Image 1 (cartoon, helix red, strand yellow):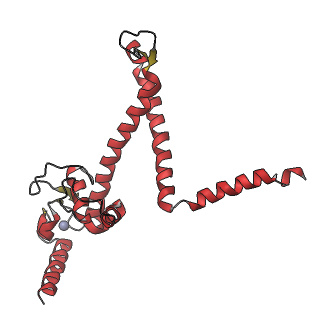
Image 2 (tube, rainbow, N blue to C red; image 1 turned 135 degrees about the horizontal axis):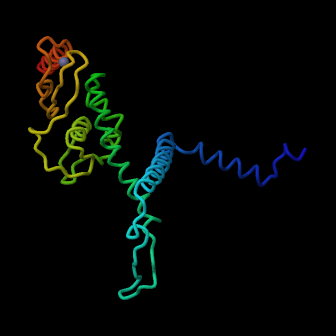
Image 3 (cartoon, rainbow, N blue to C red; image 1 turned 30 degrees about the vertical axis):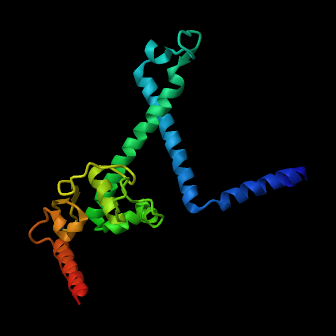
Length: 217
Ligand SMILES: [Zn+2]
């Protein structure tokens, strides 16, 4: 039954493919999967853009000599620019999505900045010593998470930082009000805008007070 038996070469190849996949960490597999999604997303955007753009001659061809004065080489901008533009658009869109997902986590799930930092991978970066400011200023994972939500700047990106002016907006699940949350070093007091009888705000204030009292002992 030739159909059911593999040649030794094919069997070895199949085994090595299997081995390569299973030897990848879950994180690597997740990144690979994300890269595939970005690549196919970019291709879709580029195809849609091409439909709507109608190709102007300038977009299709660009004379670009290999050396000054050379006119022999004609490069089609369409070959490389759409995928690049679409990938860049995806990066921008993803940053907006991340910041909105953080606001949802804070507002509707009352997730702590530390919990959010774990999911963002910032806690791991911190453990590896890679989270600090480019100027060497130490930064904690939870603060980095807040900072990304407030300013759009991620780890390693320099911020001209008005730490008392920046804030994250989210909608409180408990009182349904819009809350502006400033720098986490101010604790619960960083949250402005809860309703007067907000149960969540009262609970978080009580928890903070309990932590302070525990620290005093
Ligand atoms: Zn509230």
